[in-house]
Length: 165
Image (cartoon, rainbow, N blue to C red; front, top):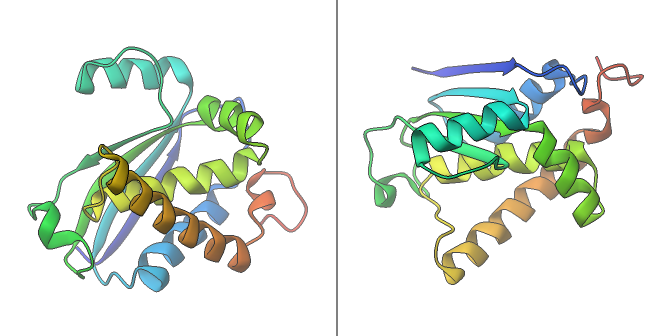
């Protein structure tokens, strides 16, 4: 395992520039988080598929924005702030990105990148179950999202946008 990243778009509602998403994610992993070794799969789905995954694996009803599966053998304490290999899979719901973008007055592209960051932070040992941990995770999520937005034109994640490729 060194730097493996697979992005699969299993939805057709929103055209997504997966090449740009790959560049953003690789920069997040290699440059911003300085990870030498990672194996990450990202799958973008619609709400019905996300609801099935949520129920099958987490026994929760309904869709959600992102689900993280950590395949690493490291414990949470070992992974945070370390350079141990990252190994996991993220499922991201485009419908939730659209809805939350409207709710929070942002773009679905920004929400999509936020979900990637959120999932990766979970894989790095961050947790959001307790309020104090949630605040710490949200601060790091916001910091990384701001850096990504300075480095990349997130609006170009909409495939078909000029300069997207």
